[in-house]
Length: 171
Image (cartoon, rainbow, N blue to C red; front, side, top):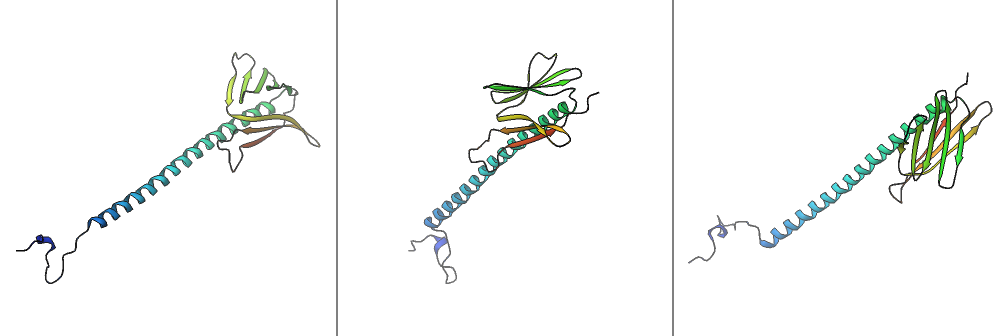
């Protein structure tokens, strides 16, 4: 009487190969390790992609705001005026059809034209903003230095921006 199952019997003088329970457990453990590693890499990539998208959106918004400010300075009909206080700063740019105001307060840059009731928020999460006159030999321009709040405390590149504009000729 043969007590071994038919699959484990010798076939032509050689034993039939099969997996043992320990080998199956080792393969399952390896599968979960590889899968876990793959998922951790996927989630790191996903987070980095989200951070890159947020940074690109911030840069785009800052560049758009800076170009708007440069356009307002170029079409200025007089000298720019600054009103600085401890909690906010406001710059007035005279235009032919009224005044344009920029305000930095509560971590936001806002803009308002004469005749508008509310301020338009241009940028949020602004750490610092400073506009100053930039005297050169033959021309006086304006410089706007802008710093956004960093997403991470250990940011490798600080979100600093610098815009320059020269008022156009007044007629």
